[in-house]
Length: 460
Ligand code: 2HG
Ligand code: ZN
Image (cartoon, rainbow, N blue to C red; front, side, top):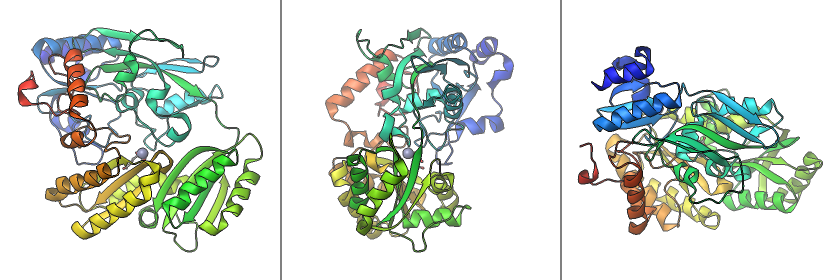
């Protein structure tokens, strides 16, 4: 029997079947996605992962890999009868190479732990996100996470040099080279980045590290329009300054955060939009930032500047997810979208108008990494029977503006019905062919990402 076999592989203490203990693995952070599993398995080594996966392969039992369970699209939530393979015990911090500027670590190491380890060598981990204390390296690879430093260092795929990963039959792929120039064949680590646990289970990662700016200044600017916020970024760049982060919030979002946390709005009068920029430069950043702000004074309602890390200013932005969750009467509908920068103002206007006219009972809050074109559309108080209609409507507006229905959180379960809005039939066919080559028995997270026809699914 499978559970006996799994107990023999990882030890009885690490095969969880108690429904109450399993709940934190089968329910997502938002409470919107709830699954069921036959068991949660917690291997501690790649060999244990490999043997456990091979046991599932032999019996055609589906496996959902899960890191910190911080995802927002149900991508790590299992379908009934699945095994959840938790990667959290794969938490070895293997090597920091301060000369090559790389980190090698287990998939269960968190983003915060990776950053702490890099900081001891005067370096930083290039991905940062509000869930840094729980999100794992395996999870950020599986979702190709972007986060708040994407504008500066690129997404996870851009920083991924190598992976060790277990394939669906238990074979171990080790594409492990710190070389930044290495063109021997297909980019398999790049393929696994963003594959949402559907192609292989990442057990170790080899990633680039970054050099921190010696000093940063954090600007919170109250602006009336997206065009003014983009203009601020543009002028900072033209002035020779580097944008380390560029976030946008709305008056409604800032008010909500201030009433559900101890954050406070530093402005005397609320502004329609709040642009939060973190800026660095090789010289006197503060003087240069103040100069740009004075040149653009007539495009802003108000502005404050504080030396980084300026945690109080960042708290306003980073508390959005939690405060929104607390404020909504139903699980929040979270739609993480991107649009081309020139289309962003029109997109937001069209979205706000459609939601107000067609779904007047809901409360939308928009925020996000605007310099990357990424807006997190959070919709509160959505009656459960309306969530699909509202999702479809938002995605229709995204598609009409040539945007993406998934900027950084992935497709998961939440968006797979709409994947045709983001990819052509030929593209989807090719992705399915890749899936069936790497996972011929369709046991790796079979219910996420690609809309499989029932006949395609070998385990049913
Ligand atoms: C962020 O940018 C995360 O804080 C979460 O991607 C976004 O809660 C969200 O919708
Ligand atoms: Zn985000």
